[in-house]
Length: 105
Image 1 (tube, rainbow, N blue to C red):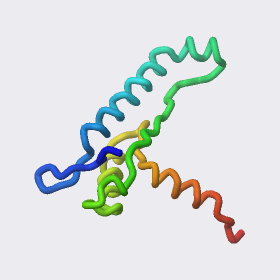
Image 2 (image 1 turned 180 degrees about the vertical axis):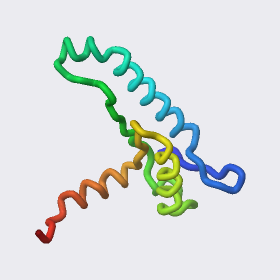
Image 3 (image 1 turned 120 degrees about the vertical axis):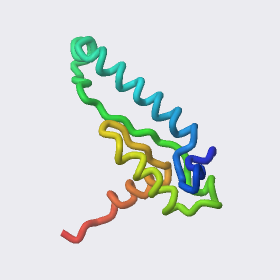
């Protein structure tokens, strides 16, 4: 697995691989927006304001950067986006495990 963060001017930033994946997802969202009516007519699915998740990387791919620093870098990156989120495979699995935990209701 490729690294998802790198140091740039003494700060961690997403790598080119992350930015390429985000750009690809944005292009998909643009396509959905531009073809909304056709998608609605053909599939009865309203694609207006669809969201995307880019699933990329794992903290173990970068043992030289702590998991918490990797997560914080992506949180900052995600904070500036409204229709797209970047998650690592581990974050997805952790979220799934939490959702399966019994609640004390």
